[in-house]
Length: 498
Image (cartoon, rainbow, N blue to C red; front, side, top):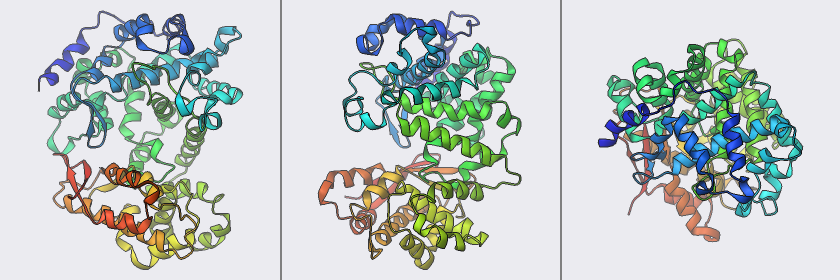
């Protein structure tokens, strides 16, 4: 693969020595381009992009070869999709810097406008759902959020480090990057997981100089801080909806406690928020989108999790249970006392109780008959409980797009008084887990999270539209699937049998 050879070359060709470690010049260039209302396109911000590419040679990685956008899914070769998404995340940080510093004393809202203004279709501030969830209609909340973030940035070097963090955060999605990294690892450590690939590169001094020259110029303490985050391999966006496997918490629990205190974990958690803000960016509209459920919701999740991590002798299941339980209490207040009585058993908490909370979270706590979830899992689905509670033999399986699969798969009957809808849906999910598990029988290690992309099932549900018949139809669909894995057995894709 030629791109594997070229990828290190592109990162060596920067003519910039040690950068000034100031992000303000980039922000001023972005402002000079005209801003989101006047100049939303990349072509209209040439000077900004030229400086970005000069300062950060790693950005070229996103424009070479094939780039993995989600497990089992890749862009066409040479697509700039991830490049613009990454730049969008960087602009989200620049916008935060602008608002946190009062837009430099001027009576303007450049920062807020950059993440909310302009024609954004349904997410525009005057459209639905944008008018309800865009931070553009919550000016003071956005400024407060930016100032809270800024409280972790004690110097201009901190802001620069966060920008570098965003530059490199998804380089592991490049097939060429992972190929170079994996070639330097023993077979049992090789992975197609982009965060793992990046962490291995950050931990190797020679690879880091070769592939991440901007990082290699930073102080050892900064480099250690960035590595600490990616070594956790933790996925904050998938936490609140019960999507991640239990083992995903292990990196957090094994993290050196100093990184809970020195801001390293904050860097890592906040990068997910900026990353999501940039997800819709492209060549025609480079500006990110700040949504309240992400900015406000994820920050609360982050703060809660960091507090939990400081509890002595915490374990994966307890951490997951406690986090989901705090989100369970309000929507299921009528059931909470009954559920709490069962939680006097630690066995219940770590197995069926955790499985119940994950299932409800997968529906974003919109399913209205939690008793039936508990009954079904207690009576007839021990295998599914094992999968959800992180106690199978072999790798732990994460269903990528699992929340869409279950929430949409249940259809309109969320009250489900008989419980038949959820029972059929749970049987469907069990079929998916079993199909994936059959492909992992010869896995060399069980000490990792395997990601199964279930989006083809979601596509079937979407195509059915109003004709979709809920859990029973989901069960029939899931009986008709197979699973195809990558060569490393770390990721898989559901395929519909013909």
